[in-house]
Length: 217
Image (cartoon, rainbow, N blue to C red; front, side, top):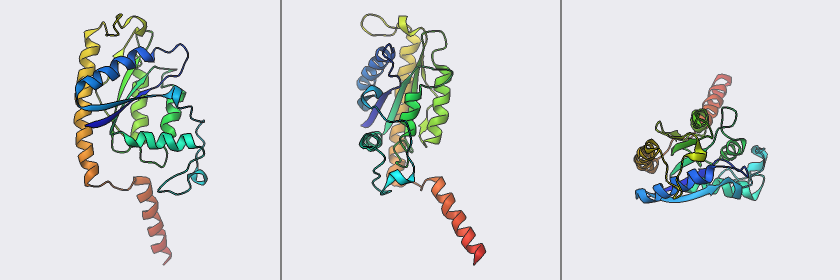
């Protein structure tokens, strides 16, 4: 069974993420393919990203600039798959969510693992531009963003008293997302077990250093 982290992408006092994430986490647990853990960024008050090579220490067991940053990297690394539940702020994801992803640095926490998105908004947009931007960020983190997403417009009226979505398209979309996520998680777990390539940026440095040495020799 894949370990799934459901990441809550908003920390605002008046946030709507709780009603969306509660439904997502409940359906993910009922799916049967996941061991689900919810990560609320309110409970992870990460400092603004300022890591550099001097804060890393041992590359095999980085210390980072603060214990919470090290703990966050370790927590992200535990999972096999991720669902990010995010609103849209100014055509993108919230800064607190971007900071949390940026803070997974040097550690291969997201690397070669699937990440899916659930977007929502108070209006008609449903967070779609945040979801699109999240996919680009996920690629740079070397995660595997999934094509199929869940979009929830008019979030304040989107759920009934029992926390179920009124729109059947949301329920069907989440079913599809979870099936895709389970498939990709299984496939990538098998691929990682065979062995992973060294990150490209490290291979590039090594290749350039070797080429420079050869040219000088």
